Image (cartoon, rainbow, N blue to C red; front, side, top):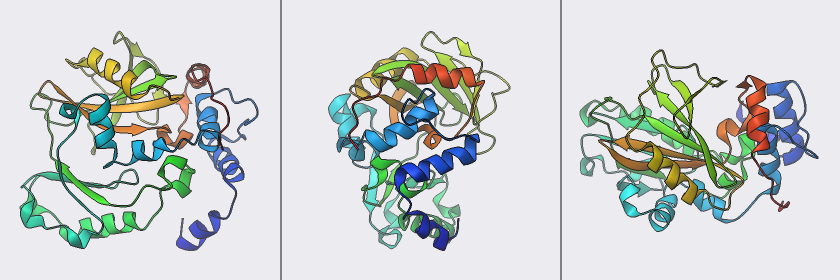
Length: 285
C-alpha cells in the first residue's frame, strides 16, 4: 500500500473499512449485528470494546510495569534502553547480543546476536520507517492508536535446550485460558502447533503449517495458563505470549486481535468454536 492510498484509507470510517478488508480476506462481509465466528467477533471488538487501559497493555514498554504489578517483576525481560529516535541509541553501551523493537506496532524486530556484525543502516531504515507509521490504521486495532512510537532494547534471550526462543501463546476467552499455540523455527520457516490445557494436540491450522516434529511440552506449561488467566481478567479475548528460557517463564506481549482477525482458521468449525467462547461486552465505541 503506497503512501497516497494509505493516507486516503484513513478517511474511511472504521466499520466500513473493516467490512471491506474482511471481505477481501474471506469473500464475505462480517455480521456486526450478530457476529458468530472468532474472526467476526474480533472485528466487533475493534469497534465497540475500547477501554483506555488497552493502550498500556499493547505498549511494549508501558506493559512491563503492568506485568510486574499483576504477576511479578521476575517475569519481565530486562530493558536495556528506550528511545524516541534511532539516532539516540548509543550502541557502545549495548551488550554484544540484544533485541531492538518498536513499542507501538508488530513485527518491527531486530535480533542482534553479534553487535560487530549488525547492519546498523539497515536497522535504522527498518525502525525509523516503523516509527513513522501508526499501526492502528491497517487493521483498525484501536488499542494501538495512541501508543507513543519509541524504540526499546531488551536483553537477548535463548533457551539452552532448544537453541531458540520459542513462543508459547496462550489464548484466553473471557478470562479463561483455553489453548496454546507453540511457534517453532521462528524467523526461518515458522511453524505453529496448538494444544489444549492438558497438552492434547489440536488438529487445525491458522496461518502457519504444523511442525514436522511436534514440540515437547514446556516445563512451565501449566504455570503459563495460570499467569495468562491473571493477565486476561476482565477481557473478552486476549492472547498472552510467554517464553521459557532455561526453565524460567518470561512474558512476551499481549495481543487483542490475533492476525487482526484476518487469518483463516481451517477447518472453519474451529473459527465458530472459538467465537462461541467469546461473550461480547456492552458496546463502548
